[in-house]
Length: 119
Image 1 (cartoon, rainbow, N blue to C red):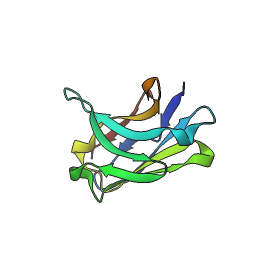
Image 2: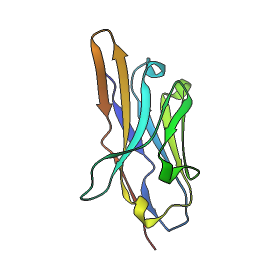
Image 3: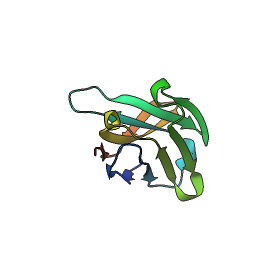
Image 4: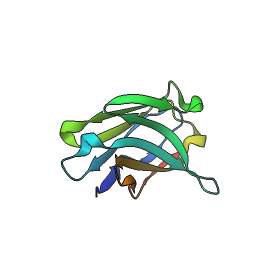
């Protein structure tokens, strides 16, 4: 299994920036497909961005150009750079790891980090 720990959340003013980090345990980080999700109060969890093997494969349309996902396999870390933040970006942001094997798909989640965008 893999343990995921998010950090970097906090309070930021509209228009500001934050960089979230997700550090994974283990030495097989490069085998996991990584993604960021978020969940606002009263709403379902939604995909923010995902990638496989250091390549960005998807950004949600509403976040295109503002959020960017990246990873550093040497550090077992995936990042989410968030720019031009808006109040509607307020949510708990979760790191997700997926591993596909012959036995099936495995999903792992971090505990989340709170991002609050407010003046």
